[in-house]
Amino acid sequence: MKYYLDITLLPDAEANLGFLWHKVYQQIHLMLVEHKVSVENSAIGLSFPKYDAKSFSDNTKFPLGDKLRLFAGTEQQLADLKVAQWLARLADYVHIKAIKAVPDNVSEYAYFKRRHFKSPDKLRRNIDARAIVIAQKNGFAINEVKTRLLASIDNLDTKSKLPFINLRSLSTEKDVSPADRRKFLLFIECEKVTKPSQNNGLFNCYGLSRRAQTEQAAVPWFEG
Image (tube, rainbow, N blue to C red; front, side, top):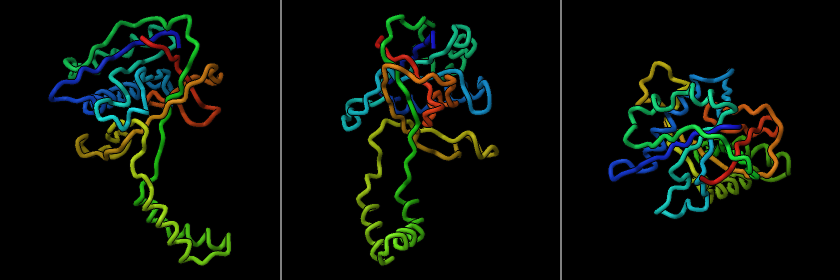
């Protein structure tokens, strides 16, 4: 990752950061799909320079901040994306900076990865089968196991503390209008390292690293 491009989100009274992240990231996802290098693989990696998971409980801050950073191996790869065209409808709400070279003194890298969470409803639907398996394996009464499982689900924090973006599914339901497609939360976690793994450097079409250690892809982490 030798070059980068910054996009700053500009919220106002009518469009807050959460709304802008939804609109901007939806377009960036479409752009990466359009420019994918192979099935579900992108050469473009994304970073959130102001990522702060600890600010989740602070209503005055947005955990992802107000900046999205795109990385590529070459300057031409970023230029070919034509980011301004993809964000043309949001021109009043974004500031797209010029492509720059990554600083030479980078000493830290980040893996931005998607995190999936099972909903309490889904856990409840599978509870009978899970209770039987656990009971048979450990010699417990099925009803006792089921009661304990239900109690653990009731105590489950239904909202992750990780930053997330509201999105709509575009990979399925091809005949459904964009407004009617399934909504979902894209939870994003960040892992910082001083020495990234030497993998293929490919990201998914959300610009994020995959979770498998052999497929992880890092981006440079620096201020500015």
